[in-house]
Length: 308
Image: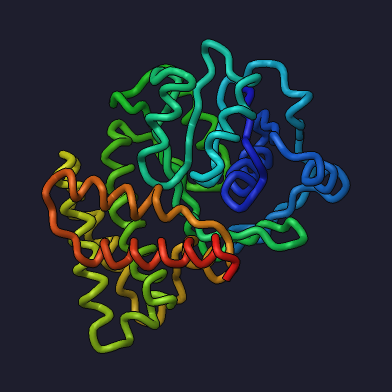
């Protein structure tokens, strides 16, 4: 199975690197500067699950021609249009595309561009970043990738993908109801991003305050209500694990969106919090904490646009 990974940043670089390390036929589609650096220094991963440094196959856009069996998208939502243009030469009639973007509204655009039958459902949980020298740093032992057919059930192509993923050094899971998993991550991530961005603090710092634990719980309940209104109520096990993470005393955990704010980077405010808020409003739900969180994120974006 020929696999193309778009980019070699924190997410694509980590999971693609682990696949390459396991012997999978992986190629990274990169900009020339990143490709040159990896050619000279190899792909570098630093992780409590084991470090990796070694050569990997790369290709730049102008040299991308042959169809691949699987294309993995791990770009930011605001780069999706550019990413879709970049992968078009790699997509043939039987190519499966696995997006690992946050939220849900990217599916409509991918379906329109390539056809719904070629788009799988996928999500990952990982704490990682890429340092200025290109090293991918994995923060903790959480490194899971879940994937499946959006129509549900199991197909020969998803079984073949699962067999490749199972050999790599990360937790992989073939889901027979990946839309349920996507909604559960959407609800959890929105609560984590909403809380840590709004407070500009880690989970541990927030819950150490008088009202922090209660506010996070209320925000998570708002997000769960939206999932339930969409016909995908968050299951008890996901609620329990989500609350354990969201209310852990002393936790240094933050959403990647909060780290992007601290780095004065672009954020996925509209794709995550904004989209969930619109879905809540369409369902007639009152979500006051989501409204405040989205206002905060939009205010940050307004200041960025003004150069402040």
